[in-house]
Length: 280
Length: 217
Ligand SMILES: Nc1ncnc2c1ncn2[C@@H]1O[C@H](COP(=O)(O)OP(=O)(O)OP(=O)(O)O)[C@@H](O)[C@H]1O
Ligand SMILES: [Mg+2]
Image (cartoon, protein in one colour):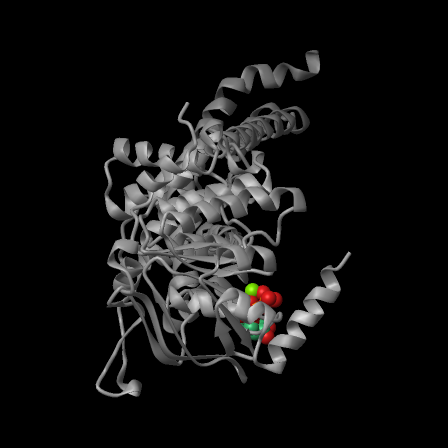
């Protein structure tokens, strides 16, 4: 049908690098606790348009919570998150503790601009692949069905799933489901994409196809925040790597700098453990 | 074969009774389902006050035998000055009674969906209402459909109680025939078969719905 070339992807995803250095995501002093456990402590993170930021860190360091706070799937006690100039969740007040919670409807509207891909795919099992991808554009944004389907076809072609459009998710492999999930998020034309360990539930031989789709997306200029344990992938795709531990950003920097000459002992220890585990 | 002659004479009367049973059951299942869904929604999404009221209602209903509730309403209604034909009075009792059990079935369906489905829907910018409509309900209904169908069958069988408040249906019809023919075994066997057929049809229809509403799982 449609041939999958990088040509398609650059048409499918609007390149955003043109307006370089515009902050697409600005997290300002976000703190989050679960009961007595402080999971995020005063996190500030800024991601510019077209930038790919990879977040790494030990289990339980708060990476998933960080992503979930960005699109307000998780409420937080303190701080502000702004996407491309528009607050999501809380509007800033005169002082930090005067922030104002937005209404559920406003929050839902703000979420349209943030695509999220989950570790466990989370496709809607009662909808076909095509329907999974078109449901939100049609029902949330009011895109006419014909146009939504045309766009879904482009996106599914981009992730190499043109022949699976009529299938139900249960009949797809994990890697295929995850690529549908990526297409589903992209169909909303998000300004930024969040990926939470999207390959860690996959069989090793299926990891490559999902990472390839993400690579292509990054090349096309999408702004991305990626949580992953795949270090070589992180090195390839990242403009910047952020290392989290205990709910704080311990160190961040260019991939080669952070991975090969980290300045903090905690990062060095983490990478040592990682290398021991994956050495053959 | 001769032993079943009374049944042959009475079959038309029995079937008319069965018709009344079906009418009564269908008339109750529809409002019971609607109320059940509303109660389930109130319990899952309502604020604390609404939730407590619903819980109290469910608790109350679960603790009262249907027969007692039917008789009670039968004597109470005239006193309140509400002039309801007995058929509708009975339908009302059934609707309120079964709504409580249906709400449990629907609530379990809604709550047994993985949290991740809600997250995925919300991350796509869906409002609560849209998410319920296109993501949660279609899946919850499917999960709820086997217990829902068995509740409906239960309701069909429970209509046999209404003869106590003087309403005529299959069981009452059977008793009348027995009085005339003095053949209780044959007649009630016939009635049992009819009840079974109604419930079995219901089960088949439920399975058909389940398959049609959601392939792909
Ligand atoms: N819903 C919750 N309720 C209570 N505690 C939670 C909840 N979600 C996460 N936590 C706790 O918050 C901490 C951070 O969790 P989080 O999932 O953000 O870590 P993570 O960095 O994503 O870890 P992993 O690499 O294992 O995915 C953990 O200690 C976790 O147990
Ligand atoms: Mg995580």
